[in-house]
Image 1: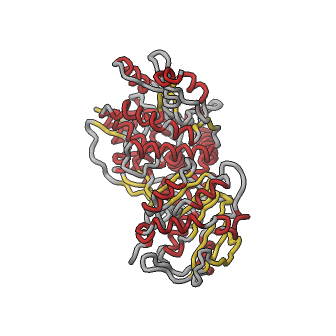
Image 2 (image 1 turned 135 degrees about the horizontal axis):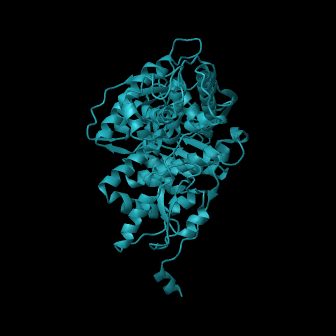
Image 3 (image 1 turned 180 degrees about the vertical axis):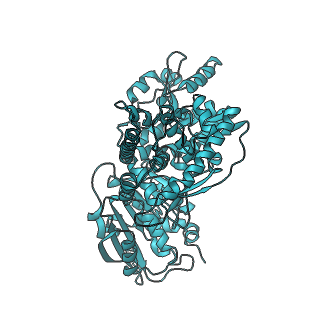
Length: 584
């Protein structure tokens, strides 16, 4: 079967010329009044071609993600429309795997002249993948060409009934269907446009989550523990999720779920708070075997157990065993007994695996955590936790407090005000910039140059700061890729604000050069740097510095969309002294 993408790629110059001659206001006249208004709107252009429509959406005030699988078309689009608020992705239907890894939701999705190139057998999956990227109240704009295709660009007819059927399946409303002539003057070609909208709150998984949290029978806190462990991964390490090709399911490393499980239950056990009737400390908790007790006795705290960390010696073997015990309990208890309402079907499917022993070292990276098995999470639940986790977690914690209070009352135990909440507080690693500062000082003492990533000014040993590129107050992340050298004035002015796309792009060379100097120059630090980046950032390439920087840009966009963090436009770069003297 001929691949339409190849047909577009081989004649990219011809098609780019044709598309750029057409006025997008005329092409999309039938749904101009359907574009949503407001600030911080995000659009997805699937099959962006020459970038004509992406640039048009930018002029309408949207930030745009432009998806284009043809290298020739994509390169032309980037050249013709070089806007930092148009971000290009190499991706294609029906999977849209790279787009889904971004964790974004969109106010508008444009599918212009694309769906008829998707084979009928792939269309249900393609439509599901597209629809699941819509924000609450979002609009899906589709245009399809009717008529014969060409040998190198085959098309399959798309009927109104077919699109209406897909819309019903995904819970979308059909707002408008219109017929339009072909603006290139092809007599045998006509166009049909569809405007579809997501009418509800866009969180179809919320009632299910609410039911599990508030209504399910619970003889222990384990179901809440599982949900919170997954929610924390959705927030801090979404790149660890692997989407299935044929189903709306993501597979999480079961070891990562177990790691968060240990992070939650260590402080609860240390405080002796009951997690089931009659429990105190680690007593009677199925996962709290010898290894868990050793971690407890050894003073290991939740903040120590983070993705990217390394443990060696006896602690490595102990942690490996504790993760395995937690994995087993998760699979046998909460994952097994969390069911859909009025059904025996499980919401989560755990597939435990037996990892190799960790006698001398355990590195908490994606490969290691996947070696404990996988946990299958339904796509709607995963997306809801990614987008609405900040609202779901307080309900989880509140119900956890209520359960523990009930267990304590039955045991005749008095708990102090706030005692349970204190142990349930998720403790992120302390704000620690010491390693980045130490590396910078070592380089300065060797006579090497360190520059402020925001202004390019040369830094001195006693007059520089380490800045969190993505502000700590919005997202407590002390990963090496997020720690950047900055002048004190620049760091003070940036504060807790998020760099704008232009500010981040302007600092690109400074940031990647710092990464190269500080982390890639040291084998051990380079591994830690890349492990942390792979867990937290959506990386699409081979994990080189340019790919990591692109992942930083995507993470910045998601933080802006999810939390509306105030932005910082940067400072005017300082001219090098030689240039200043030449001008004067």
